[in-house]
Length: 176
Image 1: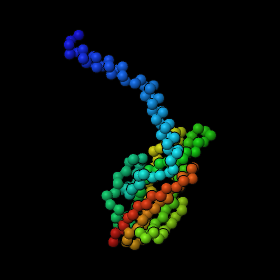
Image 2: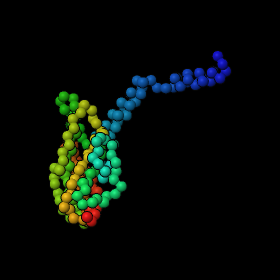
Image 3: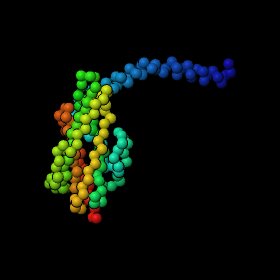
Image 4: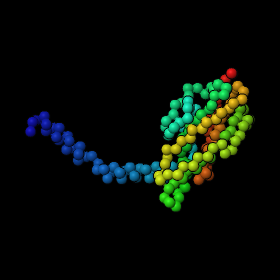
């Protein structure tokens, strides 16, 4: 064996001896996932990510943020949001269901409600896992709303656990 080969072989053996076995990796992952689910279930519904986007999002994490919250008259407002802490209903067939309902509130900067629509949208998803990657892509057309400053509120109700969280995004309708 050449002298330069011995250190490389020693390094490979040392790495092989210190690398965790696949079963240990899976056990570590499973424990961490169970801890994440327990933390999730203990937290109320919250929405840490909510923003205006350029076009409707096709999937979780796939969105292009808008550079501005100034909209032209007739231009749709599209909001991307990632709720966290929502509940899962455990079904008899081994599936889990999440269920959220969204109310819409449009107000002026002083807080006066201009438009309110309870039950603007309802999103129910049934899966075989307690999915945490869930998103909302909310499209709103405000044709005929005059130029000015507004605040768009979406109240997201967790229909499983009963909590609610509010998304509030100020925006401007520009002069036409």
